Image 1: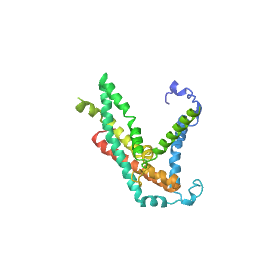
Image 2: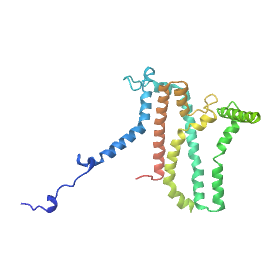
Image 3: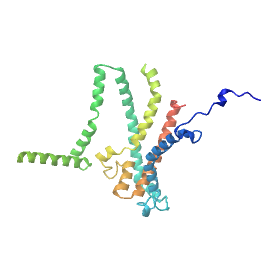
Image 4: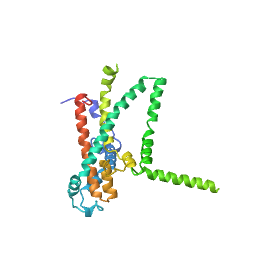
Length: 170
Length: 94
């Protein structure tokens, strides 16, 4: 006959919430919340995937019907523009990575140099926020056929004309 | 000191920065759309602009979605490739 310790005779601990459902059941609510959040993030991508696999007749009724096709992918792959577009994206990505060299070394300088040098570097970085829009605006002003910013410029001119007209009227 | 101590210690951080930045830059849309809208003659078109034009201007949602999914696949493959190559140079994760 084996000896029974007092610890063996003590009642099992009372588990609250979902803990009494099953071993490890206490993690159930957390898992459900995690699945719900993951589904919220994944839903648009899944909808996109579903839309891409639907034929043209069923594209507005993605949730109905069971007809699926790879025809859309074939159509995209057969177009020459898509390869040019991917190449352009790749070029932009490479240039952005190269610009990290400036960013990382600037960060190092900012962490190392205090006083006027650090302030100068930081002022330069802050100034670098603006030229993107200025260069874009300048390009459009010189070559109005280039892009869509001309619409912004036209609306600015119209607004200014309205303001000046109303001020003259008053 | 920077070359032999600081830079080697920054390597793992830089690898993560490079991967995340390349993924982010690959799906650029706003700046190019604002400046040129992919023109002239679609010469500055990015894959994100291509997908947008197909879906919301040509109103071909299926083809636009397919282009976006192909782009997502390309980004995943590219990111894994960059990470593997850089991971040889510096061990980011064990």
